[in-house]
Length: 289
Ligand code: PDD
Image (tube, rainbow, N blue to C red; front, side, top):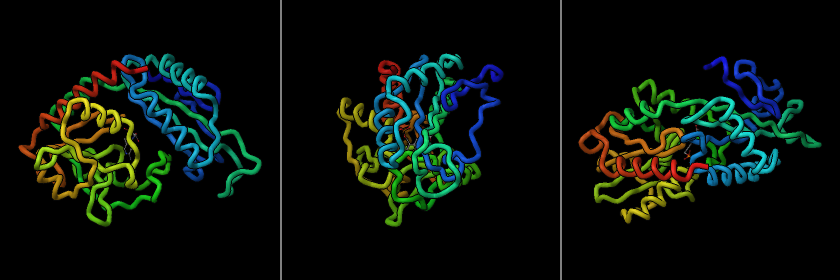
């Protein structure tokens, strides 16, 4: 299987093992680029429109030219899935400012943006088993820049936070700002069902990524008529919550059962998180495009 893996690199499909970018690619030199990750169900993209909209926004905020129209990009993404025979998996797209002699300011005249796409299969059954048990998170001080709303490939604080989580036997790290409030996870948005039974997650005016999965889950919460308050919470509130969970293209809706070593609720995935996971999976499959 791995022998057949292919990647899209700047206009060509190449063997994954041979896929490479130039040493003066600005993604490599400066993390001067953006990315998106889609969950893939049945060979189709989950939450496709939300990810395309955020991609456009991220590129616009960084003044990186759109490398191709959305229709053409969709063809490239679909072709990457097809050539890799992905049924259920993850699709990764990076667009960066392109290849130019190393100079911090933008290349002038501008160069063509670099575009790379990779895809990999995921084991849905293993994901379900993980969700059935729930996962642990740790907290870590927020130390990222002020534009976490842009999905840039500059992820070093996220990398270090995730590694700290792994070393603590956890799967995610929640960043906590200077007011003691959780912003989000290293690669997911953070949620609780508080002691009063109200769903809480950070609002998007805060310095967080506007998660596409978060947005879909908000819609499902509305449809289900569950109590919601987009209001931040502290780690103490999360530990005292009935439930906690994370959302993201990688985690989907994943129950959190331990925070910094303390059990949340009875230490097992809660009913609201389980229900939202089931709803989300069904809707994401139904709407996958
Ligand atoms: N991460 N917050 C951060 C910091 C993220 O990196 C992500 C996604 C999310 C969730 O966003 P969405 O629901 O749109 O996937 C929130 C991706 C999956 C990654 O870095 O692999």
